Image 1 (cartoon, rainbow, N blue to C red):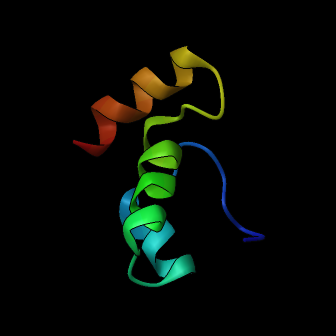
Image 2 (cartoon, rainbow, N blue to C red):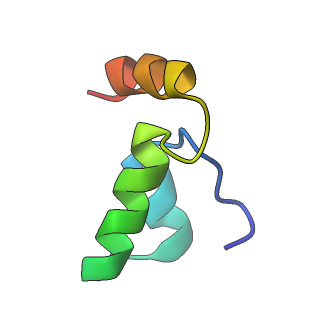
Length: 50
């Protein structure tokens, strides 16, 4: 899990973790939406990744 950072795209996270399992999918959503970091950053990221 060393390379994971909040705000990464789903593709980047899958690249590090491999195809997600059900629990992995939640983890990916967590990183993609930036819920582990500040809400403001999450909003900016959500716009750029959709």
